[in-house]
Length: 157
Image (tube, rainbow, N blue to C red; front, side, top):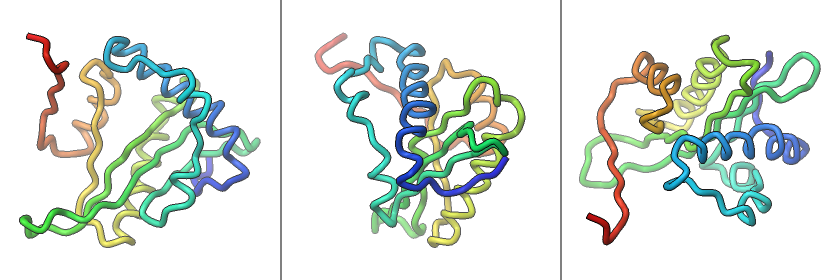
């Protein structure tokens, strides 16, 4: 399995084989919060990661050329009130079911951490849905838990 930066030639396969299935899995975890806009799904593209030097999209490719997984992220400057440097946030990770539990997500994280370090980042952040047990388990093993995130609908009690 080879991990590399995505290219414009990967756009259709990334969308069809990785992004859309990832969107659908996310929606299934929390349908009320993650309800998909099908027009938005249809319009999903990878250009935002390819056309911005502060963003990256890595893919894992099998020896046969099949895309098995992706990770994407973005570099951010910390706000000036903090004495810490830049950080990277992971904004997408998806591994096809048949490639899960083989260490592929860890390899993708290694790659994005290298990318972040090359860009002067001091930290990498990631979040997961509370019901995504596999992701929470992996992140708890790999990272230090710093924050817990809460969401509620405006106007609801």
